[in-house]
Image 1 (cartoon, one colour):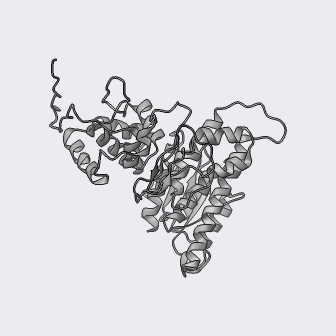
Image 2 (cartoon, one colour):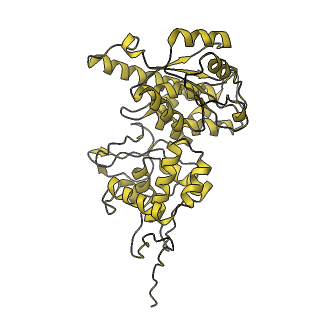
Image 3 (cartoon, helix red, strand yellow):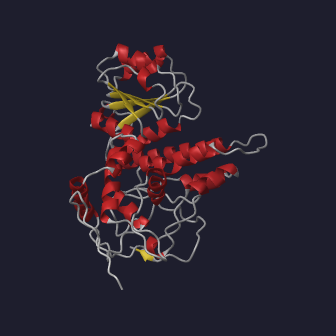
Length: 382
């Protein structure tokens, strides 16, 4: 039998040993703090997938594969567009990969640890997109777990740290409940567990569900709107999460939400005019609150005159506008900048269609992603 040697990397990176078992998608997802569905999306769209394959088994991630994913994750959190972040990750040289391989080893030392998700098929169908797992060994980073009582597929899962690893809630679960106009189920699926970051919940579950619904054509009867079912469940979950957090602050001896001491470094969050469902603004405010920042959402008509009145009255530390529209009206942004040139203004624009129309100033920032927008705002208010 002819033996095969792994060729050394021409850039000087550590060669992948042929006997290394590689890492399953669930393990890599836990290390990066993303959903397994996110890794599969990065694989399909950008080619950032596992490169090791053995006959009769699933593909596995090598050390270099994981290092590239760490680069991708870091850049997207900094607000870099996913396509640009992937391009940088794929072209990273040996020294950069070696630096991130060192990071890998500090996150979770044991590659041989058997995780519950390694015991089941880690390549689900395309329409099943798990958005999180039960944390292994009480990991510090929170993950979205399945809501207790939900439908469970496959064999009984083993216990991990005294918890039963139920099937994670998927985007398909939420979309199916919305299309069936099952408000109770949708409410249950979208409830935010204690300790889960609303930003991760929004990016991994709610936003993809909204995108999926936007692609579906449904024959409905009077009074049935799937998007409204999902919007009601989303707002209810955010309201319940925010109230529980405020109750905990007061119970611990802290000031109530409207106390002057908590209003000094506030962020005013606007939705773009004519935004059909300003859910992203509510998710952003909840995510800011989860990180100790105070935010208020401007609801109702927000024309230029009222916007300037609010900014003058509140004196915010920053202003943010969030939109899902390709070509939103930027009148609020221009008016705020012209009246308050020193006030940081952040605009979450998913499309490049009107990016050139933003005021060209160091205090006006365009951010492409929700995590990037949250990161930039926290850097200002802290």
